[in-house]
Image (cartoon, rainbow, N blue to C red):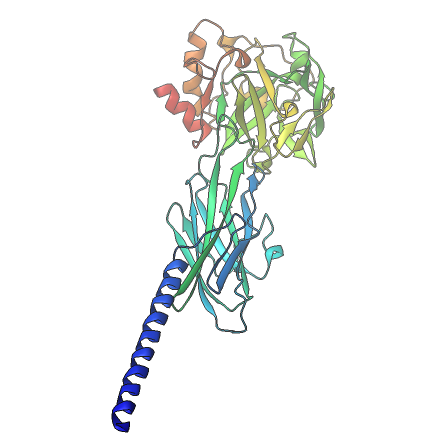
Length: 425
């Protein structure tokens, strides 16, 4: 009787143990499943069972022409609350809604301060080629963090008629420990500001005015000013008399841009001097004398220095021109009007002024000096102009959509090559 009771007791205990193990297994399986499909909060913090993570510090950023790239830090943290020091595997994945910003990099840093907006690419960097997903891995103990620096370059075609293109960048950090898993994510927007399409002005002399102002670009000191003279705005002289040639400017192709050269003083080009602009002795090899012309509206243009990415800015009234960060301001928008004189020649642009002033040449007599090849690409562009008969339309009177406009869209192309290609077409 005793033996039978003991046997029954053992069977009951064994059955209870099996049932308990089965229940524990079911409960564990439910938790693990829930952990693979977590709820993500707006702040980038999420919890599943005892496992939690966060992505913080990833903020929106703006890229301008003066930026060759933009760096943005973010921090991934194992926010699990536990006495255990066991590390969890962290997989951080970056994705983007577009490819407008081209190549990017991401690398670990000690803290957010080590990732300033102009940060150089650091050691251990990973190349990102959008829209391919890139995953970074790191083991983090509870309470431990890893900060990363994300940098994207100002490459590709970022010019837009609105001046702005943007992309959303998403960071998703997944924490894994055994059967448990949780994911936190955060997004930031990277957008450009005041980056417009590049254009090529037709080869002419122009008066340049700030939008909404009656003042013209002017070399201080007149046509006989010396190299290094300041350039500002002054009362416009509508006369075609060459004595007012210090208010006439032409655009000549140089590597990746244009030299902006006044009629007088001859042999000079616009060049920054600190935050000011001067008419300095022409040197086509100087990047500081190269400029890009961007169309900010159908009738206005901004002038960007190739070396600095800064924009020419006018004072609210007449005064000296300066360089400033491009910000889509009216004082950085200019209207061009053609001066009804002969097309500028190489001699006018490169030879220093003699003791007497030159008189305006006729269009039929305007020729580049024989043997000059610096801008021979423009010869093909000039010939049709001289034989067209009607005057070339003024820049600020021709809509950008007009096929006969006197600016050529050159986004992504060398200006001199663009002139040749569009004329051949």
